[in-house]
Length: 517
Image (tube, rainbow, N blue to C red; front, top):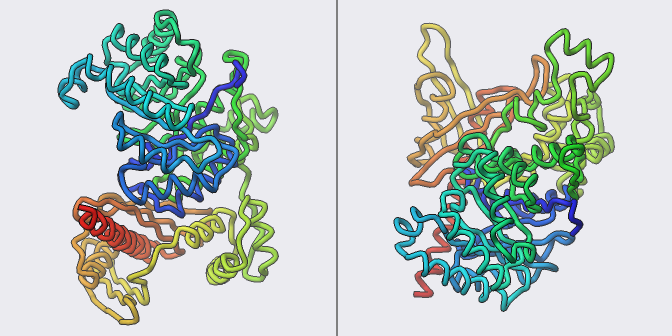
């Protein structure tokens, strides 16, 4: 690796997937990994193999199928974790084992119930054990920012001597501020005598909204690997945002003097895909990839941009893969027109996928005058993220208004049977959801509901994203339609079908575990 290159370690499929309701199946993880490879990330942390058979298989499949990128698995400083991690990543061209243990006194005493000496010994043993499998071993000192500095130095020095080729300094709870974190990295480089034998890395969380700033402060002080996620998704308030770090380094090359391998023209596509797969909507004012990132409402700004773009835009939208939606497709457009436009947007569909999307496209085009690019992306997303439909919508009718009791009549198909219920509620959406609950027999709690217009115009499709919970399991559901009540019902059913599919996989997992005992 060149000294002026930053390694982009993407943990969207591991830490990012830990966002509530963002769980992905194997096919979705592989789809995301392919896009991350196209994006040009250096390392994909594909999951936590020991955590479940599904995660193990996902990491193994990604390691086997995705080339041109290191595939990494996470493991606690436990031999069983490391064994599972190696068995998952060993089929990759350049596998990596990432092992970790906490180093702050708070975690050591309250969580691990260990002593500093025991943690140091475990850290060294784990790195040495992983080193028997592969020379590519990363060690993370969990909660490093709140660790005693001298003790942290001792741990870092010891794991480097044990063979750690990458050492990660995480701000696990987003506690640091940039000056403090940058100084900490600088002091580590000054006080750990063998620090030049490893790649120094950081992994910053966003609890105070400082994850990107902290990561960049670390880079300015010698860090050469940054761990991040697409759209900044992750535990609690999320992780450092990949697109923000990459574009900051690119835009301010005069300040950083560094590069990455990222193909920035793939950023917007990666952002849309991860948002679509996880159901986590990107906020409009999100830097780089938000809907408003390159929008200008002020007359002064508009005048300036029209005269000379860089007056108010420090980045070219085309550099991150953002372009204007085009009014190209109507009800008269054929398969070739649809296929060519999708290729222009970066999607090559199989004949089966194209046929399915074309049928949905024709149905939508009958309702709308124009079909926009964002409409097409929603159709592709719906096809590629489909789950087995235990319940599907057959009929929906709602009534509501001032002085009228909101009522919904819903008919569902369930394994060849027709179910029908009517219910009243606090509005047409609530009424429809209550009718659906009666037919499915599930006790479902609506955790979150989000509605946005996919494209412009009075006939725009509405996209509804919901998060629902049942027995502690949270999943997301998504539905689109020119009728927002129908979109709401489709999103709710999509979530219910995901719940049933996930519950089925968990039952199979529990059964296998019992058989092994």
